[in-house]
Length: 116
Length: 413
Image (tube, rainbow over all chains, first blue to last red):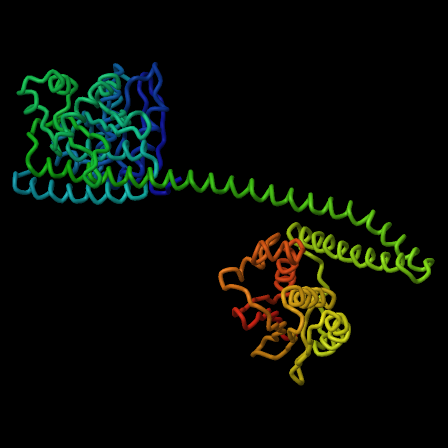
């Protein structure tokens, strides 16, 4: 296991909360995708990604966030990004993606918005 | 964020994205992983939620096969692959789909409906290997010339990575086949040695009975024609026994190696004993024989019985391939840390291109000589292996019409 990346998952009602830590890049993006897809079930269509502890976000990392947003949407759910670190906010703002991805200041705010 | 700063930051981000993609593609060895990695990177770089990659099949007629797609259905993506590939094969490296749609092409409209905006050919050395396509930017910004270049560059990198991955897989498959082939050959070799071993043992048992009876007949018969015939039969039985023992030794060497008795010896003593034993027989065949041993040779480590076997084989060979009147010499001298024992003759010589085949089992330098001189072509092969097993070597030099030299090299003790 890469020491620079790990992720914990937790269910809250109809949502799954995933908290990755470390770098989100070409090496770790497939692992985040796998962690999120395996944690979600038909009863938990919504996904909350807590990105407070992400120290670096590369284009591949941004790519996997967009894949997850698209995937949850196509399956009747939604993706909310909670408490993004500065390392996450920068690239998302550069690509104007903060307008298309739903970003909340905290995990509690995301869960509240999803009614969890 | 003002527009100038944003442009600079986007340029920096482009470089970083290309560096990351390049690095990861270099270590990727699976086309499926290469495709996923590329699409994540492109989607993140351009800020689009749709992308797909098709690669031309190596086996299925060469058409594009969908490897991975995000943001559009797999069915839709599968259908789009061939039309995008056909469009890009006409010399276009990349294709803004909207421009293409203005031609009224139904396939272009299909691509637009799938959310794709830009497609590039995946090429290596001018050869088309597939297509990569991306959707429109989520922020609505149009793709510019630099974006097209970026996509073409990334597509080229993907092409090289896929080519490398395929080469690696082919090399791995070839290695696997070679390994299997080697294993089969080794098994055949083992079976051959086992067969030789079994056959040799089966031959030796009745031969011992024949030799025993010949010895008895030799004792009880009076001098005369019958006794001479017994002597001929005894000599032939001994020759046959020698051949069978060579076969046994050879199969043992091939199978598990021989148990050698390596001990320090006085080489001069051994050579003098050997010469004394062989001189009468060689003289009987009308060849001259001489032994020249350098004084104060060091003590040498070898298996006495096996070294005598090697020298016997070399001298037998010299007798076999020279005419009466020839001179056979055995010489021993120190060469640095090694000791060389040479069996030299002044016979017809052996052509240079046949020297090495002398040491191959069941072969001699010349097929016709084999028939003429007899033997199975095992003697020299066995002699070389025995010399090697003692930590030494056996080499041959020869010159036509001058003679041949067989040199055994051993290490000083």
